[in-house]
Image (cartoon, rainbow, N blue to C red; front, side, top):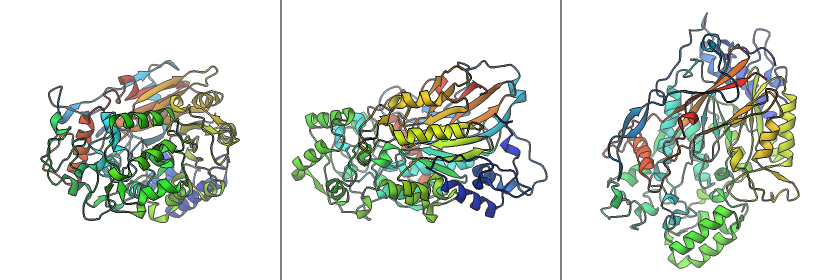
Length: 592
């Protein structure tokens, strides 16, 4: 393994060189080509070192300095400093306020923690992971809110505020002036899937604008007012503007007049100030995150049409939920039958062509759209090569000695759990082998435990599908693997994967930003100069204040309410923050 150099002092590329580099990098995506320092994507002038595009961009403003400023840990705005916590009580609707921060825990299952490492360590990469934003078109006709008749947690009272919450998270990331442990600049952001919720073009546009900056009106259908379940008069759902004693108000939920009007009002995202990359999740790839029904004319017409089912009996809701959980109807035949059987009970809504599902090709094209480039790179990891090959996986260089690998773990055959095809598995192994002189961080949506779905890909019916354990075994064959970073479960969990010969690695799963505690994660890679490496993980919340004011319906006020509603959502799990060993950590590895 080559000598590790701190990226914190890496020389900066100028804007022209940066744009040239990022464009070249994206062209290698999905082809299994090694992004080695001598590759054309990293061609530089004699005075410039071949560093990561994301690193170079984050250093661009420092080019005029004669010497780098001393680095210092930056913990402000992280969960080391404080977290949202209930102010009092143990039942009913509970208000949030400022709570004590979470301490850092040293994890030494894979290597011993040696004394004095804090004085020796050198940073070589620092980045932010966002995951499971679930930007939701809450008025979409295909949504399954009525499953709440079977399970209270099947519909979330906070879903109308996903865009406001995501913008507040972007504001938090932009306010992080350095890494929490090393003070190193943050070099990029990776979002590990389920960026959208309903595989809807409305949501995809909102997501890309949130990430790259611009104005967003989180509304669909009638531009004048909200038409979803929260204005239905049904007691099943929280009716925020109404005096109706709905099921949630009976639990203490407030009446907030003007809520729905504020929820669909235009807001503005500053966009990330860092380069960002994108990984696909099952909700980005499949209608409702579970149906392998690409090209299904019935579901497409229903999505853009003027009818919406808002209520369902408990027995039928239970049967549909069971079908989805078990994957017994992966193409949605059972869902078709249910919708047809309840045509007369549907309510009229305003049709909207923008609610149509997007295809994988449209997903990539949207990322490549110059309107959404923001701070780059062009395509945010995806490329014209992905379009040509019909793939959604790629590599990119994180630092001089580190590459990132973004996988597509969604199964086009249907079901919310994942797998990968043989072609992608072979590509992954070739990429690991060809980059044996670089460390590797793998990104995906699904975790090793949630890749048990082997429904055939309709486009490649003869191709075998491979689960999480096969990926763990493959990654453990290569000593350069440091971590597998993912989401999907909406829960913080960090798993050690031990292997002989310094081939161990860490699996880092981060909670979602739609369910409480609504977190993202900063990850720092450092060399301890003692034969070990450390991966520091630090969780962050959005920039919204912990306390809420029901009369504050500004963009910031709604983001705070988004968090508090998620904390109080009926039936919501209370274990998603994980244990202390899954939150703020130091994960130690032997050098490969």
